[in-house]
Image 1 (cartoon, helix red, strand yellow):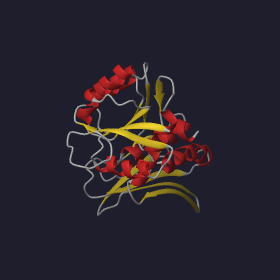
Image 2: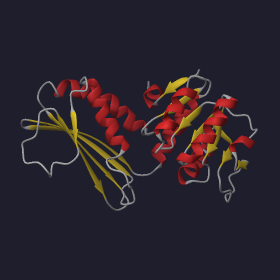
Image 3: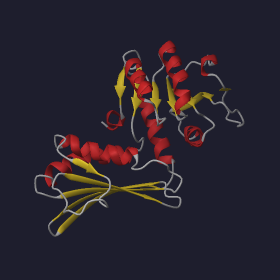
Image 4: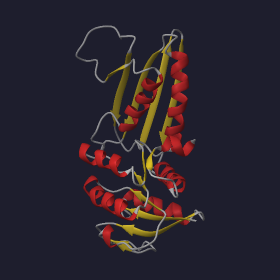
Length: 251
């Protein structure tokens, strides 16, 4: 059984992960960390992670960027590996994540969905077939109207997986409204749609002459990210120090 500390346990993702873990006999949340303790979680909750003395195999983090500093203090001190899901980290924090990964296992990914990360692998194969054949590549991502950043980190990660496979030959284009010229062969267009309650939709288009191939992922709830985080925690528990990502989890 994998023993988990849930960092950010009373946030939306923390609560979803807590519920999913109750139904998974191979994992147990043994403690939670949150600034607000207003839930009956069924496990002890600490407002200060440094006060947590519960033995655990791994931490899952879905919190806020400022809380990651003390989380990394804890990880470095206790040598407990962490699945780091919080976004919006500063360059200084990202540098520290890299430094601490030399002492303890840290898994970080732009998207925790098993589906998205499998698609990233598929896209590399697809790009190596379609790009040399002259197909144009576009990415369209859609999210709810409360999302403030655009394009999504996942859209960039999908583009990066394609570009990596092609030796970084593509230039990302986010807006064509200011220029009047035909599409360049080495452009990779990325478009963002914001509306309603769309959880997350990403579509990669390979457009050739008289043929279009679309690879699409739709998230209908945040549970897909929670399930991925739990699988990542199972994978990371007991692993040696180092930086890991979801590609390691799916193999």
